[in-house]
Image (cartoon, rainbow, N blue to C red; front, side, top):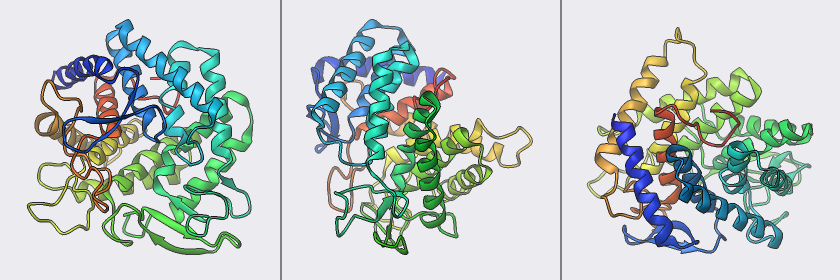
Amino acid sequence: MMWKQAMTDVAEKTLTNIKRFNGRFPHVSEDGEHYELNNNNEWTNGFWSGILWLCYEYTNDPAFRQAAASTVRSFQQRMEQNLELDHHDIGFLYSLSSKAQWIIERDERAKQLTIEAADVLMKRWREKIELFQAWGPEGDLSNGGRIIVDCLMNLPLLFWASEVTGNPDYREAAIIHADKTRRFIVRGDDSTYHTFYFNQETGEALRGGTHQGYEDGSTWSRGQAWAIYGFAIAYRYTGNERYLETAKRTAKYFIENLPADYVAYWDFNAPITPDTKRDSSASAIASCGILELLSHLQETDPDKAFFQQSVQKQMTSLVENYASEKDAQGLIKRGSYSVRIGHAPDDYVIWGDYFYTEALMRLEKLRNGYWYEGK
């Protein structure tokens, strides 16, 4: 009953936000109250589209469908204009917008747009050193050989494209990158680096680092959450047991390092004081990842009950302690974009809202998000 009521609350707030945002896309808040809006030029814009599609599936209200379809048209225009697409977050943008429409409505234009998005992501593939470059132009001195853990959630776009087109190139590149991430970003204690650097001429492994974590060797909680979910979905597409094992290991690390209320601090190695920031979005992402992981575990798996209990505790805490007030724009409070640089360090973040919504839909057994086909 808690999940149903929470999802009803999400739908009501989102319906109000459609009018508030008036065709623009929410990104983050800087005052803990009002979302910064843009005209579809951020890496985060797919999350608003995804929330709209989830709410449409939950309510069957055509107002959600109309708003969601409008975002897909905006993503078509963004593709035609090649507007801010020179990065690896293409999966975040198009999996939750045009691919969602394809999954729900079998709209052929949406399908073709999503395949085009996969082709755009493939432009980030660096054949010489076999990785997807996250940021910057090819040959960039700082980022030319750099991968980041977040990219695991962009790989499902490639797995899907390979399935619908029959082209193995998408899948092969995704597997190579996932393997490299598993080998170099996941550490021996099952924690993760945020980023890892390779020599862009030889492919030699250089060092781990961070962009948003407390320090290079720390464990940024949202990065750990990306690892849980990314490897769980990689297992769904490939059946590779190593991915399932890694999803379990990274999930255990995340859970075992949670504070008493089961909602993560922004970095697991940051000094804990009364002022230490949380990242509710990390716990929402991890909850989705653990729910995905659970869907692959046998009833006899000795860890299954542990994971079930943990996700119940995390989501209960998010609903009871972090869900926003009735008239708020955001859905869950205390998300952080980048505590490290002071950008929206304790605010609403649209990806947190999306994964919170997806987790509720998963708990209600209605929809597992749009990372793959089927419920």
